[in-house]
Image (cartoon, rainbow, N blue to C red; front, side, top):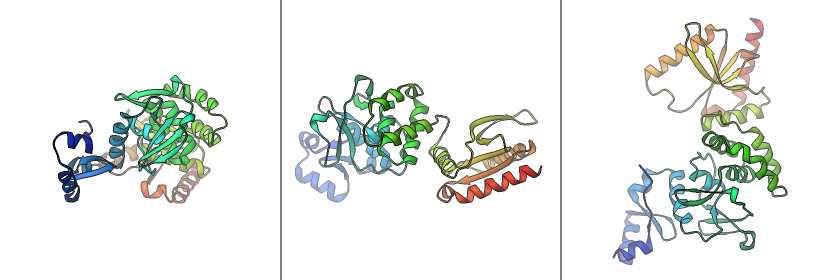
Length: 298
């Protein structure tokens, strides 16, 4: 099912709803404002999370843009379907020609940018920056963990964007954050399958641990094939990120226990971590070091 349609003040007035009735519905909470003069039905508003509401607003505002203006940065990432972690979504980001300047106005954040045809795309008839350009813009302007989350996801959905990134980064030489963007681009990996796995890679790198293999496949003694979130082959250590809701019922939990037993039967150490431990990754580092010490003794 698609996103709900916004209801603008102008649309409501044209449909015969009076200004008094609009104000009344806003007071009652039957309409929920998402920008000045732009509303959603309360039931539609509450059914969406922050990313969903941003997507609806970006799509609406994008359909009203002047020529040469395109949805960009984190807003383009949302329209391209990327998950957003820990980034503000209060404003819709728009890139426009340098002559128009950069500024913030209401729910819009305008960026001055020179864009080539290769930097442009459309999503649901809304003009947006291309996947590769979006990755570069987010990598320049967002903190590294958040940029990696978006970049990994966009490369996973559009692997061809990786080939376009070097050209875009070269064309952005001299822009603020370009060195950071190059570092982020070099770190991205489409094999990360979730926000948690992308953040785990950042934490592993920042902790100084060796880089693991991602989605490595092993065959158990009874012929079953398992893909591993993280695998340090040189140490025989398997790393697994446990996202919220990974085990929907007891059968899933039992199946995971059998899986872990099968991995240990191959001689591997298995370490796990959760969302909470991503914010206290020293606990995971200690777990890794203990596992490495055990493999040295065997």
